[in-house]
Image (tube, rainbow, N blue to C red; front, side, top):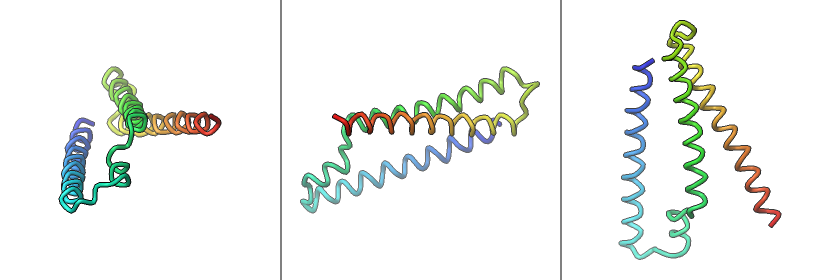
Length: 113
C-alpha cells in the first residue's frame, strides 16, 4: 500500500507543479500583451466562495482516503493491500458524492434568493 500511496503523491505533485507553472506562464503572457480585462480576471480570480467550495471538496476526499489508510494500518488482519486501496477509492468517491450533494444544495439555495 505504501508504494501505491507514494506513487500517487509523487505523480500528483508533478501534475500540480506543471499546472501552476502553465497557469503562471499563461497569466504572464496575457498581461504582457495587454489582454487583461474582466473576462481574464474572472478566469483567474475565481472568487473566495468558489475556492472555499473547492477546498471543501478536496478536504473531504483526502479525509476519506486518510480514514481508509488509518483503518488499514489499525486493522492489518482484516485488510490486505488491495483491500486498503479499495477502501481509499471508495471513501474518496464518497467524499466526491457528498461534495456534489452539498454543491447542488448550495446552488439551489443561491438560485432561490
